[in-house]
Length: 218
Image (tube, rainbow, N blue to C red; front, side):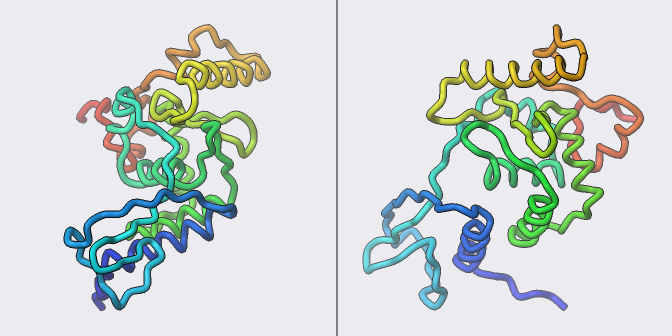
Protein backbone atom coordinates (compact mmCIF):
# COMPACT_ATOMS: atom_id res chain seq x y z
CA UNK A 1 0.00 0.00 0.00
CA UNK A 2 1.36 3.39 -0.96
CA UNK A 3 2.11 5.60 2.02
CA UNK A 4 0.76 9.13 2.15
CA UNK A 5 3.52 11.70 1.51
CA UNK A 6 4.32 13.94 4.45
CA UNK A 7 4.50 17.72 4.22
CA UNK A 8 7.86 19.52 4.54
CA UNK A 9 6.69 21.00 7.85
CA UNK A 10 5.91 17.56 9.25
CA UNK A 11 9.27 16.23 8.09
CA UNK A 12 11.07 19.07 9.88
CA UNK A 13 9.02 18.42 12.99
CA UNK A 14 9.89 14.71 13.03
CA UNK A 15 13.53 15.45 12.35
CA UNK A 16 13.83 17.96 15.17
CA UNK A 17 12.10 15.59 17.58
CA UNK A 18 14.63 12.94 16.61
CA UNK A 19 17.50 15.41 17.09
CA UNK A 20 16.31 16.29 20.59
CA UNK A 21 16.10 12.63 21.51
CA UNK A 22 19.50 11.90 19.96
CA UNK A 23 21.48 14.85 21.29
CA UNK A 24 21.07 13.85 24.97
CA UNK A 25 22.10 17.38 25.81
CA UNK A 26 20.80 20.92 25.39
CA UNK A 27 20.81 22.07 21.79
CA UNK A 28 21.89 25.51 20.61
CA UNK A 29 19.74 27.24 18.04
CA UNK A 30 20.12 30.31 15.85
CA UNK A 31 16.96 32.25 15.08
CA UNK A 32 16.29 33.72 11.65
CA UNK A 33 13.33 35.83 10.53
CA UNK A 34 12.36 35.51 6.88
CA UNK A 35 9.45 36.91 4.84
CA UNK A 36 6.49 34.55 5.11
CA UNK A 37 5.55 35.15 1.48
CA UNK A 38 8.43 32.92 0.40
CA UNK A 39 7.12 29.91 2.34
CA UNK A 40 4.19 27.55 2.07
CA UNK A 41 3.27 26.89 5.68
CA UNK A 42 0.68 24.35 6.77
CA UNK A 43 -1.02 26.13 9.70
CA UNK A 44 -2.56 22.86 10.84
CA UNK A 45 0.82 21.27 11.50
CA UNK A 46 2.39 22.26 14.83
CA UNK A 47 6.11 22.59 14.29
CA UNK A 48 8.66 23.86 16.78
CA UNK A 49 11.10 24.44 13.93
CA UNK A 50 9.30 27.66 13.09
CA UNK A 51 6.65 30.07 14.34
CA UNK A 52 4.67 32.42 12.14
CA UNK A 53 2.91 35.74 12.26
CA UNK A 54 1.28 37.77 9.53
CA UNK A 55 4.53 38.86 7.90
CA UNK A 56 7.38 36.62 9.02
CA UNK A 57 8.42 33.05 9.65
CA UNK A 58 10.88 32.65 12.53
CA UNK A 59 13.12 29.67 11.80
CA UNK A 60 14.85 27.92 14.71
CA UNK A 61 17.92 26.34 13.13
CA UNK A 62 20.59 24.23 14.78
CA UNK A 63 23.85 26.13 15.13
CA UNK A 64 26.48 24.81 12.72
CA UNK A 65 29.97 24.20 14.09
CA UNK A 66 31.88 22.96 11.05
CA UNK A 67 33.22 24.24 7.73
CA UNK A 68 33.41 22.02 4.66
CA UNK A 69 36.92 22.32 3.25
CA UNK A 70 37.42 22.55 -0.55
CA UNK A 71 39.69 19.49 -0.37
CA UNK A 72 36.84 17.60 1.25
CA UNK A 73 35.17 16.95 -2.10
CA UNK A 74 38.06 14.63 -3.03
CA UNK A 75 36.82 12.29 -0.32
CA UNK A 76 33.07 12.90 -0.55
CA UNK A 77 32.69 12.24 -4.30
CA UNK A 78 33.76 8.67 -3.59
CA UNK A 79 30.85 8.06 -1.22
CA UNK A 80 27.25 7.16 -1.89
CA UNK A 81 24.60 4.89 -0.45
CA UNK A 82 25.07 3.69 3.12
CA UNK A 83 28.64 4.99 3.40
CA UNK A 84 27.55 8.50 2.43
CA UNK A 85 24.53 8.40 4.74
CA UNK A 86 26.64 7.16 7.63
CA UNK A 87 29.11 10.02 7.22
CA UNK A 88 26.25 12.55 7.06
CA UNK A 89 24.80 11.09 10.24
CA UNK A 90 28.17 11.32 11.99
CA UNK A 91 28.81 14.98 11.18
CA UNK A 92 25.19 16.05 11.74
CA UNK A 93 24.53 14.29 15.03
CA UNK A 94 27.42 12.70 16.94
CA UNK A 95 30.59 14.59 16.02
CA UNK A 96 31.92 16.89 18.75
CA UNK A 97 33.98 20.06 18.44
CA UNK A 98 37.19 18.06 18.80
CA UNK A 99 36.33 16.19 15.58
CA UNK A 100 35.75 13.03 17.63
CA UNK A 101 32.73 10.77 17.99
CA UNK A 102 31.76 7.67 19.93
CA UNK A 103 30.48 4.57 18.17
CA UNK A 104 28.69 1.71 19.89
CA UNK A 105 25.56 -0.40 19.48
CA UNK A 106 23.52 2.62 20.59
CA UNK A 107 24.85 4.86 17.81
CA UNK A 108 24.30 2.06 15.31
CA UNK A 109 20.64 1.84 16.30
CA UNK A 110 20.33 5.63 16.20
CA UNK A 111 21.71 5.61 12.66
CA UNK A 112 19.13 3.04 11.57
CA UNK A 113 16.35 5.17 13.11
CA UNK A 114 17.77 8.25 11.39
CA UNK A 115 17.63 6.50 8.02
CA UNK A 116 13.93 5.85 8.53
CA UNK A 117 13.31 9.48 9.55
CA UNK A 118 15.04 10.94 6.48
CA UNK A 119 13.34 8.46 4.16
CA UNK A 120 16.11 6.10 3.07
CA UNK A 121 16.27 2.32 3.37
CA UNK A 122 17.08 1.07 6.88
CA UNK A 123 20.46 -0.69 6.54
CA UNK A 124 21.27 -4.03 8.11
CA UNK A 125 23.94 -4.21 10.79
CA UNK A 126 26.49 -5.96 8.58
CA UNK A 127 25.98 -3.30 5.90
CA UNK A 128 26.70 -0.58 8.45
CA UNK A 129 29.88 -2.38 9.49
CA UNK A 130 31.01 -2.55 5.85
CA UNK A 131 30.18 1.13 5.34
CA UNK A 132 32.24 2.15 8.39
CA UNK A 133 35.16 0.05 7.19
CA UNK A 134 34.94 1.82 3.85
CA UNK A 135 35.06 5.23 5.54
CA UNK A 136 38.26 4.09 7.24
CA UNK A 137 39.80 2.80 4.00
CA UNK A 138 38.94 6.07 2.25
CA UNK A 139 40.63 8.03 5.09
CA UNK A 140 37.35 9.73 5.96
CA UNK A 141 37.46 8.60 9.60
CA UNK A 142 40.19 7.15 11.84
CA UNK A 143 39.93 4.92 14.90
CA UNK A 144 41.74 6.30 17.96
CA UNK A 145 40.85 3.62 20.48
CA UNK A 146 38.03 1.21 21.16
CA UNK A 147 34.76 3.05 20.56
CA UNK A 148 36.42 6.42 19.82
CA UNK A 149 36.83 7.79 16.29
CA UNK A 150 37.94 10.99 14.59
CA UNK A 151 36.90 12.63 11.31
CA UNK A 152 39.63 13.67 8.88
CA UNK A 153 40.07 17.47 9.15
CA UNK A 154 40.93 17.61 5.45
CA UNK A 155 37.16 17.22 4.94
CA UNK A 156 35.65 19.47 7.59
CA UNK A 157 37.10 21.66 10.35
CA UNK A 158 35.52 23.35 13.39
CA UNK A 159 34.61 26.98 12.79
CA UNK A 160 36.24 28.25 15.96
CA UNK A 161 39.50 26.29 15.75
CA UNK A 162 42.79 26.83 13.98
CA UNK A 163 43.00 24.59 10.92
CA UNK A 164 46.70 24.02 11.53
CA UNK A 165 46.06 22.95 15.12
CA UNK A 166 43.27 20.57 14.08
CA UNK A 167 45.41 18.96 11.37
CA UNK A 168 48.38 18.62 13.74
CA UNK A 169 46.17 17.04 16.39
CA UNK A 170 44.81 14.50 13.89
CA UNK A 171 48.27 13.52 12.68
CA UNK A 172 49.66 13.38 16.23
CA UNK A 173 46.80 11.19 17.50
CA UNK A 174 47.18 8.86 14.53
CA UNK A 175 50.93 8.51 14.92
CA UNK A 176 50.59 7.87 18.66
CA UNK A 177 48.28 4.95 17.91
CA UNK A 178 50.69 3.50 15.35
CA UNK A 179 53.55 3.80 17.84
CA UNK A 180 51.52 1.94 20.47
CA UNK A 181 50.96 -0.84 17.95
CA UNK A 182 54.63 -0.84 16.83
CA UNK A 183 53.65 0.03 13.27
CA UNK A 184 55.57 2.35 10.90
CA UNK A 185 54.35 5.94 10.73
CA UNK A 186 56.85 7.82 8.53
CA UNK A 187 54.31 7.98 5.65
CA UNK A 188 51.33 8.79 7.87
CA UNK A 189 50.25 11.87 5.91
CA UNK A 190 50.16 9.98 2.61
CA UNK A 191 48.70 6.78 4.02
CA UNK A 192 46.11 8.09 6.48
CA UNK A 193 45.43 11.78 5.75
CA UNK A 194 45.26 12.18 1.97
CA UNK A 195 42.44 10.75 -0.20
CA UNK A 196 42.96 7.06 -0.79
CA UNK A 197 41.71 4.76 -3.51
CA UNK A 198 40.04 1.45 -2.78
CA UNK A 199 42.11 -1.64 -3.47
CA UNK A 200 41.92 -5.34 -2.72
CA UNK A 201 39.63 -8.30 -3.23
CA UNK A 202 36.71 -6.59 -1.50
CA UNK A 203 36.60 -3.73 -4.01
CA UNK A 204 33.61 -5.11 -5.93
CA UNK A 205 31.63 -5.46 -2.71
CA UNK A 206 32.48 -1.94 -1.66
CA UNK A 207 31.33 -0.59 -5.01
CA UNK A 208 27.78 -1.12 -3.78
CA UNK A 209 28.51 1.21 -0.84
CA UNK A 210 30.35 3.93 -2.74
CA UNK A 211 30.63 5.57 -6.13
CA UNK A 212 34.23 4.28 -6.18
CA UNK A 213 35.53 6.49 -9.04
CA UNK A 214 39.02 5.02 -8.58
CA UNK A 215 37.83 1.51 -9.40
CA UNK A 216 38.60 0.32 -12.90
CA UNK A 217 35.79 -1.05 -15.01
CA UNK A 218 35.92 -4.83 -15.39
